[in-house]
Structure formats: structure tokens, C-alpha cells
Length: 209
Image (cartoon, rainbow, N blue to C red):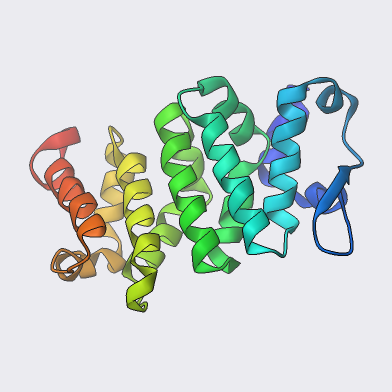
């Protein structure tokens, strides 16, 4: 089973065949799951939520799936590890690249919770280029009503860098990070508070930097 889980971290194309959507876009049932997943209620639910997030076309469904995954992972390292080792990083990458800003905000928020609960996932997220994707979201030019997504991206980056000098350095060395000074001048209170915390953590001697 461990071999199957490790392989699924890289290849999550199987999610396309797991869920059977109804005509209105909602997922009525799951098909194609391996027996071990069907027997384990936790893994079954995780697969269901991942499939909805990966293949869903409705923002409401995708946002609810991301929130449910976040809730399951909160203060539950076992659930967080199961998610990560069953390919959630790749699912999140797809959303951070192609999803709507609303769904991206939920995924960024879920990322911060997953990393907080299962710190070993920091390097896996980094290997999947999540750091650069979050930096891209954080430094992109958006309308005023899109600031929540930036706040969640900043929150996820702060959690990913916590206690990890390699990731902290990769963030600081990024070309996109050159806009950090400009971001500190923004007026949105939620984003400003998170960025101020990041600034204190990684420019005032914390984590060996």
C-alpha cells in the first residue's frame, strides 16, 4: 500500500476516473477506488473531497471541498499526512495554477493548515513548486475585492517557511520577492498583518536567517 501511496503523490490522473458527476456537476458517487480506500472511511472521504476539488467545475463545490480538507487536517497530523501522501500537493498545484481566485484563496488557506499540522509536508510542497505559485499570487495585480486571496497566500508562505531555512531562502531569493517592500505598503489590514509577521520572522533573526 505504501508504494501505491508514494506513486500517487506524483500522479493523480486517477482522480479523473474516481468520481462520477451528475448532469448538474455534483458528484453523486465514487468509482474506481482501490479496496483499501473503500474500507477506510477516512481515506474514502479524503479521496472524495480531492476528486471534487480536482475535477469540479463549480466554485461552490470546490471551495467546500477545500474547507472540508482543511477542517479534517486541523490539529490532526494523521489526516494531514494521509492527504499529502495521497497526492494532495498535485491537486493544490492545479488549483493554484488554474482555479478561480475564490478557490485559490481556500486552497492557500488549507495549505497553511496542512503544513501547520504536518510540518514534514513543507519540502513536498516546495518540490511541487507551490512556493513560487503562492508568491505569484501574492505579487499579482488584482482588484480591491481580491485581497483575501493575497492574505491567504501570505499566510501559507509564512507557515511553509517556518523553521525551514531552505524554503525561507528560496522565498527571499525569488525575483518575485523583490516586490515585498511594495506589498508592505498596502492598505488591506488582513494582508498587512500577515506580511508584518512574515517580516518579523524572517528578517529579524528568526530561523537562522
